[in-house]
Length: 144
Image (cartoon, rainbow, N blue to C red; front, side, top):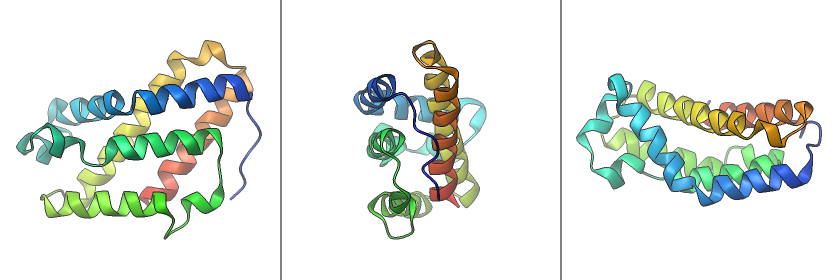
């Protein structure tokens, strides 16, 4: 998988730092959106820590990939792929259907994309496209 075009480093580094620093809050946004309209029904049965699972850790790791994309980070057996796999297994053990698990990651993509769009004034137009491509690549590669 190609790393894609280079993005302007400084604004991207700031965004990655912000994503890492806000990983817990971003994960909470995923949970809140998952609870809204019963998008992910099993979330309602869990306490806050159970609702979050490994999502904050995954978000922090994803920030590193947005800044420094490496194809090997997305391969099966990589630490990031193992984190996603373990999260999915924990979710299945808690009664989540595969659809619920995929929905959780799709919601994460939306939450992160909203953050990117909120910060888009800091980026050149081409950089927004680079971020979009990287975000889609990481979610698509790790969830499928």
